[in-house]
Every structure is written in C-alpha cells, then in structure tokens.
Length: 393
Ligand code: CMC
Image (cartoon, rainbow, N blue to C red; front, side, top):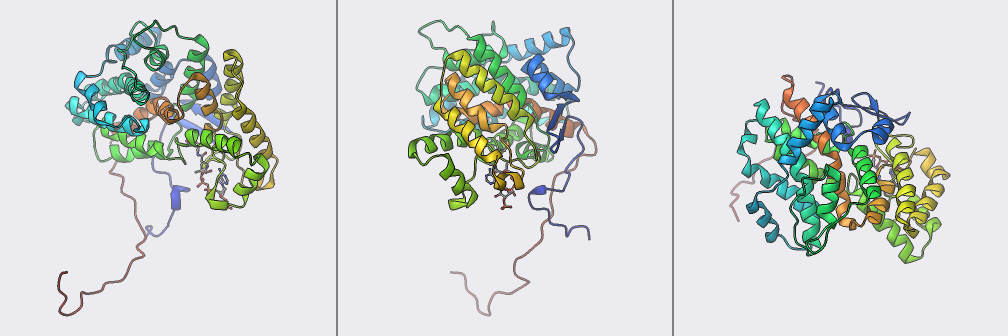
C-alpha cells in the first residue's frame, strides 16, 4: 500500500523539499543558502544571516538598514504582556516562560491569523525577531529577581540583548566587545539546521495554517528537550556532576559505554553528522578565545577536553561515529559570559529563530504544502465487543 514502511524517528523519510540549508553529514559540511558556515561565522552578523535565511539572498546595504531598523522599531513589549511574567513562579524554567509568552504574543497580533497575507506574515516575522530576545532577557531577569529594562534601541541587536540581560537600573552598562562578538558568532552557528526536530515541528504546526506565533512556540517546546537544544544545559550539568562526584572521566565514560542507568555523553552524537560537527569545531575555537579574553579559567573546560579526547579515541564512540556536536562547548562559553545554566537553551532558541521563520515561510509560500499527517502501523487489538449486559461503572 506504500503505508507499511515504518520509519522510526524519520531516519529515511524526507518530509519536504527545501532550498534553505544544505548539510553533508559524512563530510561535516553545513551551508546556509549555499554559503559555508565558517565564512558566515567569521564575516557576517546574526541579522545579516537572518535576512539571508529568510529572504534567500544577502541584503544590500539599504536592505540591511531597513531590516535592522524595522526590527529595532518592534522591540517593545506590550505593558500588559509584561505582567504575564508576574503570574509565573520565579523558579519557572526560562524555556517554559519563553514558549508560553511567544504563544501569548499572538493574542496581541491577531493579524497573524491571516497566514496567507504576505504583509501580515512579514510584519509578524519582524515582531518575532524583535521581541523574542526581549522576552528571553525578561525570563532571565525574573529568575534572578531583577527589574526588566527597556530595550536600548541605540544599540545593535546583540549588544541590546546583552544589556537587557546584564544591565540594571542602578548603573550604566558598557557592552564588552569580546562577549558581543562571541555571542554574535554563536547565534549565527545556531541559525538553521534543516529538518531538525524543532524546525520540523514548526513546519508541521504551520502546515495546519496555525499562526506563526503558535508555530514558533511549538518549535521552542520541541527544542527544550535534552536530546535537542536542551543538550547544552545537560552538558553543563554532566560536567558539574563529574567534577563534584570525583568519579573521574574514565569511570564516567565506562558508565556511558555500559549504558548504566541510560546515561549518555551529552553533547555527543548527531542524527546527521557522522563526522565532527562543523559548528562544534568553531564553538571550540570560540571557547578558547572567550575564556582567554575574559581571563576565566574554568575547570569544566578541562573536563570537557578530557572527555572529548577520551571519547574520540575509544572504539565505542568510533564504531558509532559519535563526535562532539554544537552543544558540547557552547555552555562553557555561555557560563563564562555570565548566563545561568537554565538560560542556555533559550540562547539556542534565539539563534534558531531565523531558521524557524525561514522554514515556516518557505512551507507557507509553497502551494504544494499539505497538512502534515503521518501514517501509523496499528498494533492494538482487533475488533472486539462489550460483554453482554455490560453496564457503565
Ligand atoms: N552517548 C552515548 N551513546 C550514544 C550517544 C551519546 N551521546 N549518542 C548515540 N549513542 C549510541 C546509542 O546508544 C546507539 O548505540 P547502540 O546502537 O549500541 O544502541 C547509537 O549510538 C545510535 O544512537 P541513536 O540514539 O540511535 O542515534 P540517533 O540518531 O537516534 O540520536 C542524538 C541522535 C543526538 C539524539 C543522540 O546522539 C544523543 O542522544 N546525543 C546526546 C544528546 C545531544 O547531545 N543532543 C544534541 C544534538 S545536536 C544539536 C541539537 O539538536 O540540539
């Protein structure tokens, strides 16, 4: 029938055509719209990459100005939405706060229901790019009991975000260019990764013609899990546990190999990359640079490097072609920047946003898009009947 092919985890099934991102997992190649990731990470800005992903080409100077100005104009959150944060406990995980607040945004912008109106799609795309970093920073501020700051639109995108997170009302905040450059680079590295779980979620939800806020909120929820974006938080927890337990890297790796309690080497392995994740290579360089520039020495970095060396020379990992992925070293950088561990996946979400938007729009623009509705293989009972004289309890 063609329906009987079970593809657990969609290892072999293409869900769509796409012209946004190219990956060759065997060769460790990643390109956005044809441009190699290393070139973009070195020589571009996050908003330029966002433009490239969403519209297909690099912006001209005027297009870039217009794009960044439009984003700047939309950074304010409605004051009522700010009160939304009060209703949540201060220990709330910032990923839950982010996904809830993004979904709530759609209640302010009902134009987003008009999913086939290009002007409305454009307006709400810009709103999401402008407001998600602000929501993310407020989730952070709430978790540490500090007042929310208004966005400072005299600053660029990344610097404004840093100020919203690390500035306070009592003293002026001066952005450290080392932090700014490193964060810009990390956001670029996260900006798209074709049909990963969260992006596929965004496309699936979008295929029902649900609005763009609902779709992006669903993507954030998918990213939250420790096998996906949540891995960056899980890596730091793992490194901290290795340090605190004193069990040592060798013993930890043994436990992973023996699959004791299902423990995995977090930040290792990837569905698509069967060689070194090209993003991980660039992140590792950044980790060295940032820690050196900030004068931070973090024993967790030493543990991470020891773990990597150990795993790369171990048959278990070699046979399964498990290499460090993008999440392995990012947490160490975010920690050095001053972000609490629970913010790490939120930073991933801000980085991935342009990719989600590009994919939602690509699918929405394609007249061939149909509602996503996978098949199943039924394994339950055959037809049966309630017993004679059955009464409801
Ligand atoms: N540690 C130990 N063993 C592993 C790991 C790991 N991190 N990853 C895979 N394996 C083993 C797995 O046990 C299996 O071995 P066996 O054949 O003996 O059962 C084999 O490798 C294949 O693993 P799989 O789970 O079938 O592979 P998958 O493609 O379904 O999963 C993955 C991919 C990323 C979910 C997985 O490698 C993993 O859980 N990694 C740790 C979490 C992580 O770092 N996630 C971030 C992914 S990259 C960016 C992102 O999406 O956020």
